[in-house]
Length: 339
Image (cartoon, rainbow, N blue to C red; front, side, top):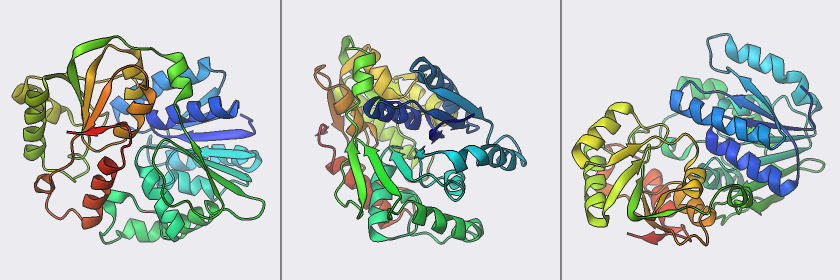
């Protein structure tokens, strides 16, 4: 494997945004998939890998989490390419895997593409010189594993800080308020997605987009199901597009209690919506899609609406920072209207 541009992805959305970045940069890359274990995510990644190959990129699939020895084999097998790559593109700067790989590379050009709304938090933390911590874990006490990994995480953060001879850029569809000194921000307008798919056929009803906030421990399950039921009734929603990380038992209960048809997409929702059919209104809780869908569906007549998270829905012990972050996602969604 040899390429001047090496891309590391761990989710379908990251791979989609690598394709968007490559389309914008007119670049061909080697994409390394650091495969997770979740079957739904793996399935979507397989489909996205097919699209990447069709676009002329080479794809290397790594069973990066396939046992105790897998990380050593993966990192060892990638070390040579990391040292020779001129540009490295990453989708998740919070990933321990990616942070470890960043300490090996000698690339003079680093690009961060969207991994959803986490990009907003990454840019803010980088601008403030803080350690890299996922938004829903901020305010908590570092675990022993966090403390053991801290030197590598700190080295990765330094690697993501621009300096003479080493550039850092962010390719994003998220709103950015604080731009770190020296970091170049380029807007992702989903040009590849809009050219490749659609426009979609629109249905008369509304569709509701699921979230993994219950699975991450932020929102209480019963409160979430009640909110979904009320939203569906108020807006005439008939389908529920599940997030790839939503638990099967939760989705079964949701379908039983709300009457919604649960759809488990085989591609990121931006592509599913462009391919259609899709509802004239898409309802979502604060998540990535309230920022990306209005861009991807621009000119189609689809309206995206965001439902803010009531503080009463939050699980016990959720930090004030997490509450504020969710409110910020809803409030900064420029192309979506409030429910």
